[in-house]
Amino acid sequence: MHPPYHWWRTVFFLIPAISVYTIVLGAVSILSSLFDRRGHTAHGCARLWSWLILTTTGVRVTVEGIERVTPGTTYVFVSNHQSIYDTPVVFASLPFQLRIIAKESLAKFPVLGWHLRRGGHLFVDRRHPDRAGILARWRALVSDGLSLIIYAEGTRSADGRVARFKAGSFLLAIQAGLPVVPVAIVNTRAVMPKGRLRTEPADVRLIVHDPIQPPAIRQPTIRDARALADRVRAIVEDSVTQSCNSIIPTAT
Image (cartoon, rainbow, N blue to C red; front, side, top):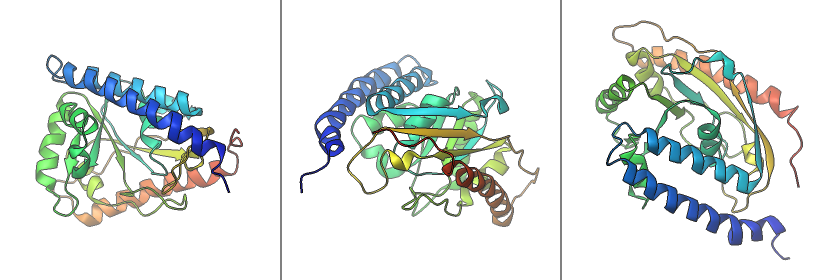
């Protein structure tokens, strides 16, 4: 049996196109860090990169609830994770200076890793997490008015279900005293699920919920973080479940 059309389109059109976007905009991003230490130009490159990927792939994003957040405010956006397309969707859709907490191995990737490091994104060694160091770097970002986006499941969902949120990031959010914004991403698995080398056009939703102010605790424990993580996950899971039944059918 021959591979389907979208496999050919992905391998011989999308992958080369996205590689060009990454190299060109990554180079501009890295060069911009020489005169823009705050990383705002690099973030602009990331937003353009995201828009190009979504447009080339045929992903149409509907954003709901953006009026619930205030431009210029520093937030911790916490999202579910369905696909590698989640990041382009988030960066293209949220009008904030965003930084991510990424696994340390991403820093080793040519161009992409250089862009992330020079752009002020945070890296964490999941085997030996340095929470104190991450919090110190996080507070430096906050002083520049930058927001964070966290995929609290820790990895992409294999079946679309929202897994339990890891508590570590929420402990940092409580310590930093930053409002947490639950974000639900719906239907990016239709574009490219985990483990499949093929993309397809699709309609995607990004749903922004009301910010949650973490409890003011001087020395929060992992139990405090777990309570906040479960609260945020319940909001995201409910939103994903309801939206899956009403999502616009995938385009062909």
